[in-house]
Every structure is written in C-alpha cells, then in structure tokens.
Length: 394
Image (cartoon, rainbow, N blue to C red):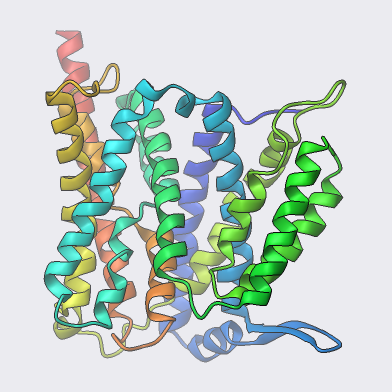
C-alpha cells in the first residue's frame, strides 16, 4: 500500500489547481455564452432518493455542495488526524508559526469585511468569505516557480492550510447552521457512537465505516448543521495504526481518495459554483460594500493578517522563520493566502444561500481577489527567489 509522500501531495494539489482554473473558465464561458440556459437548468435539475416516507431530494448544485464536498472534508479530516498523530502537527514547536498565521489570516480579513458591511445585517453574514485559502491554487503557483521556493515554505503553507481548514469547519458549525432537528441529532449521535465502537474494536472493514458514514451524513444533513461536517467527524474514527499483516486503513483511504478529490470533486465544485453572469455587472456592483469587503479582505486582510501576526511572533521569539527563506519570500507566500477561490465560494454559498441579492458581485469579488493575490504572490516570490539565487552566485 503506497502512502502519499509530501512531494506527491504537492504535485497532486498543483495539478488540481490548473484543472480548477480550467473548470472556472469553462463555467464563465457557459454562463455568459449561448449555453447559459442549459448551464443554469443543469445546475437546478432535481435529483434524490425516495424510500417509503423518507425523501432526500435536492438540485444538482446542492448535491455537489453538500455531498461531494463532504468527501473533500472527509479527506481533510484524514489528513488532519494523520498530521496530529504522526506528522508536523505532533511537534508543538513546528506549528506555532502556522497557528499564529492562521489566526491572523482569519481575524484581519473578517475585520476588513466588517468595516465595509457593519451597517447591513444581511451583507454581514458573509464575514467569513475572505477568511478562506484555496491550497490547490496556491500550491499550483508554487510548483510553477520550482526551486525558487524553498521546501520549508511549502511545508508551512500545507500546515497553515490544514489549520485554516479546521477553523473553516468550526466557523461553519457555529455560524452557518440552520434550524436544528433534535431527532436527526440523535441519529447522528448514534452513528458517531457506532463509528467509535468500530474503531475501539479494531474493525478493519471499510464497508462498516462506509455504511455508518452515510447514515451520519444523511442525519447531519437533516439536522440543520452543514452536511460537510459529517465528513470530518467520520474521518477521525478511521483507524490509523496498521493491524498485523495489514496496512493502515486511514493511509490507504487517503491515498485512494486524493486523486478523486483533486481531479474530480474540486473541479466539479468549481464548475458549478464559478459560473458568474457578467450581464449587468458594472462599477456599482464591483464597488458594492460586499465586493469591497471580499476583495480587500482577501487581498489586503489576508496578507496583513498572516504576515503581520507571523512577523510579530518571530520578532518576540515565539517562533522562527521557515528554514532557507528570507522575509521577502515569506511575504510572497502570504500574498498567495489571499487566493480564496473554491473555499471562499463555498462559504459564500452558505452565507447567502445562493441568492442573487448582490447580482453575482460577491462571487465575482472572490475571483478578482484570488486573481490579484495569485499574480502579486507569484511576482513577489519570483523576484525574491531570483534575488536570492543571484546573491548565492555572487
């Protein structure tokens, strides 16, 4: 059984980033071309399962956002558990800087968004949109730069993204849950206890975990809490330690899922969510408080939060700068954290429930901020890496 090495992880994420860009471009072409009617009808095709009195029916776009994205969060949960038990996050000294950066990368963008939207209660629901980072895109840019970016910076970004994802999960659970159903919570609790029992008993049969995982997902979906959280909960009960003569179930599932998530789940999510109609969008929409909050929150808030908080932590000797990199390179990486794309679009769909209150300006703002952050981050890392190489040659 092969385990995903750090190099393979980065390469997969980088290739996925390129595919995400293509998916977003196709979505924009479909939405703004002669296929816009077909595209919108396709997203709203009602699909579901009916079994007796039980009914679970949703438009295709929600099956992607609630279903496929639960698989994505399940993979994140597996990676998080492995990192906590035997990875970088096992050593407290190694995660101080990423934790500080993640906190800054949430606090500052949220504050920027609040400044622009504090007078509008509905608009303020989107405060978490600029707090997210799309790791696949950021790693894609880093891979293009090659040896100009030290490996230590890549490790920092991956660790930061894991902590960032944990914070995103907590934000969704606390701030983006709907009306709660007590009965569904009881079923979800029973499924969780079942997963715990399987783990403690050392059961190594995937089918048992899959069945209980599906029950957990459906019950969480019906409970009013966002269904993607079921993926994270289920992941923590997948056995990590290998049994005699058998490989680690967690590592095997992680290996099997990684390509599926990177090359199918995330591109499909990008395709169904990035289709933004440009009809009627002008300066009024772009300079709307929500748009400004998202654009400046992602581009300015993220870099100020991550770089500023980390700089203070280094200054006060609470943490050290990643090995073999200078402040200019570190700042370039902080610029890349402003690429929100898929995660920001996902939180946007939770914030405004896919309404057209802002005429797609909120989604367009995510793309604008992600593009600016990506271009400036690439330019900064290219310049800093080239400058460092020239100094070494001299």
